[in-house]
Structure formats: C-alpha cells, structure tokens
Length: 165
Image (cartoon, rainbow, N blue to C red; front, top):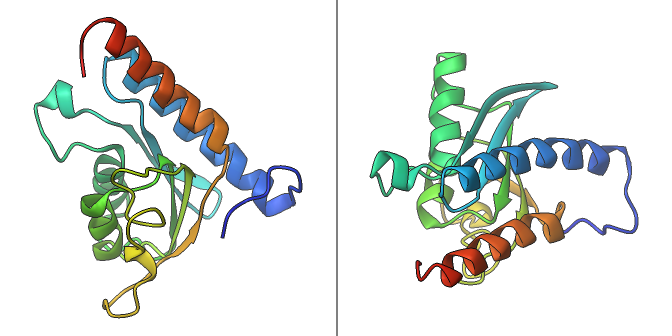
C-alpha cells in the first residue's frame, strides 16, 4: 500500500510523525558523510530504536540503518523477536535488510522513498510479502517520499561535485 499525500488519515499522520524521526536520523548520517538513510522502530507509541547508516564510520558493509535499529530494538526488549513493532525507514529496504526484518519477525514496515536499484520490498522484489517464505510483513510505502528522496538526491549531488561516490 502506498500513502496518498493528498488524503491523510490519523494512522497516516502517525506514520508521518515517525518518518520525520527517521528523517532526523538520515540527517545525522549526512552530517557524518554517510548515505542519509534513517530508521526508527516503534512498539506501541514508544520509539525503542533509532539509527542511521554507519557503513563508512564502522567500516562495516552491514551497518545499514535498519540493521542497527533492529539490533538496538532487540537489545532494548531483550528478545530478537520484534513481533509487536513497526519499522520506519526513509528508503525502501535492500535484500539484506529485508531478510533481517523477516528474521526479526517485524510485522509491519513503513518506508519513504523507493529504491529502484536495490529495493527489495516493492521495486525489484517483494520479499516481505512473499508467501513462499516462513514469515511475511505488511508494507506501507511512500510516506514522506518526496522528503526522503530529496535528502538522498542532495547528498549524492554534493558527493558528485566533490568527485566522490
């Protein structure tokens, strides 16, 4: 399901508030010269994890915002099963992150911008809703998509001007 920015109900407004928190994390990533992707995990009305990409900082190819947030949430709850949680992330998850989402049993994922090059939730694959797998997650896409896409576009434009990435 994609959110229609012209018609926002209470649930969608709640999604927007959480996505704004994820965007704050994405801004932190950009300040650290990381690809600006942010994620938060919410249980009930409480944020239990907030993270941003740290691949460059940690020299770790798995240090995506979603992976770090999942680890934080599991630590907070003392359980790897995040069955009562929702993950909010500014960019459609990649295959690695989609796999971790399924392994963590996160039942719902909300993302901002589509990722036509690596998106594994809607764009290239639909891993979270693939009934051949043991677990699935419902998906809501397009929440604050313009803002989520803009921060990425701005980052990569500035990197190209510097001759990077």
